[in-house]
Amino acid sequence: MIQDDEITGKGYDQRLMARLLSYTRPYIGLIIVGLILTLSASFLQLAGPYLTKLAIDEYIAVNDIPGLYKILALYMGVLVLVFVTQFFQIYSMQYFGQKLMYDIRAKIFSHLQKQSLRFFDKNPVGRLMTRVTSDVESLNQMFTQGIVTIFGDIFLLTGIIIALLYLDFRLALWTFSVIPALFIITFIFRSKVREAFRNIRKWIAMINSYVQENITGMRIVQVFNRQKKNFEHFSEINARHTDAHVKTVFFYALFYPAVELVSAIAIALVIWRGGIYKIEGLTTFGALVAFIQYAQMFFRPISDLSEKYNIMQQAMASSERIFKLLDTKPDVDTSGPMESEKELKGEIIFSDVSFAYEKDNYVLKNITFELPQGASIALVGHTGAGKTSIINILARHYDIQSGAIFIDGTPLKKWDLSVLRRQMAVVLQDVFLFSGTIYDNIRLGDGSITEDQVNWAIRQVNADHFIKRLSQGIHTPVMERGATLSVGQRQLIAFARALVRDPKILILDEATSSVDTETEFLIQDALKVLMRNRTSLIIAHRLSTIKHVDKIIVMHKGKIRETGSHAELIEQQELYYQLYQLQYKDQEIFSS
Image (tube, rainbow, N blue to C red; front, side):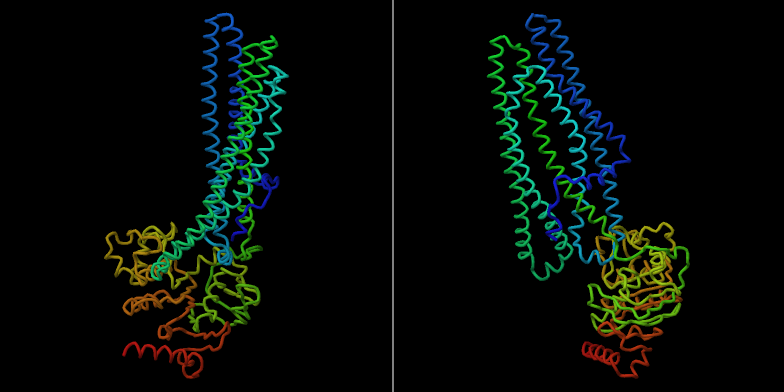
């Protein structure tokens, strides 16, 4: 994780910049307006010192008070115009930056939703959050404070150089004599800050990942008294991040005073040589004052350009990480023609299927079975036997390495994912509920599902027993992950969520393994409703709950060991019989 979040690229990458600029096309008008306003503000700033020269030499020197008032009014007008142009320039660029961030964040979020589960197995949530938040913010800074304003700084710097050379060529050369020292300071600062920023980006990603992990697992942290240990680990990461920031503060604290020192030396040279030229009659007093003002302005855009480089560098690093994410193609292959219109019936065939999460470490080996339309099948076996993996590949969260899966005679890979999953419902052991209401969690944003349908589904799965006791019924707010509801209540909501979609294929993963006896009775009734006239695939923990299914598949170490009905498998007295006896004996022990 650390290496992926380091800044290892160049300070400027033409390829990345070209790709970034492609996102600005819808806002080219705003950019042009911002550029015009930036150049206009820079031009108006150049007028101030020259108006000062005119005021001194043309009016003050000859005691022309009315003329001085005219220059003063003109000067005030210039200041007002500078204010107006800078206001609209900042507003237009910030508006453009926010729109651009909206587009890029939307693209990243959409891309993340298309990724397979294998992608999320390898990428911590904290790192992905960094891409969507701080990395996108770095791009915003580049576009709002970098690219367009760079043109303004360059234009202003060019204008100052021309003005200095126009006012006095010799004094201009004396001013430029400190530029080599300025470039050396800037080069050293740039290299040191780049390294410090690299560390900042690395440690902020680690902070995001660690905090997310600990908040998600807070129940375990508290139950096992891990607070102190986790705090110590977090403090170490936080200290590293702080140290990286302190280094940047140190370099900035050196750089800006150093630039001011060089600027002061240049001004001193101007006053020294300009004073001599004035005494010798080689320049006017107004020109000398204007020259000093221009010389003071000369170093500001140079300092700004150094700051822009740092912004550009951070943006290049962030864009490289963002584009690396966007270029990550889903492991699930969706290329080629798809069955996008075909209505799913529910016949499932596994033909010699083998699957591995990592390389050749196969968790499923040569799996073959048939599940006719409307039939039910249960998968049983020890933990790690491969039961959940069958569900994962059937829903195409992962693609298989060998063999074939057919639904209604069509290869699974030929089904459009949205069509396939729209007609497939999955109820997991660990039910995930989103923030919102119970109604929202059952509909999941499907506008075609009415409130009447939701209420019907709730009644069918016996969820109305507890929902009607809630203060707001189905419109009762649900806390994050359903923290205010019991395991059984969340499970019944998941059943209603599945039923209201009228799926052709129903998948149940340990749906009754973590509930009490009373809730299990309600769930068993709900299961009968759910499974009616649907192709059902059930992962069972309690073997007593699957006696009614058409077929039971017993799995062991990724292979199918036995197949048959409950009675047939008991009669064989092999692995299923052993599992049933162990569970039955456990129940006897607890009941006694």
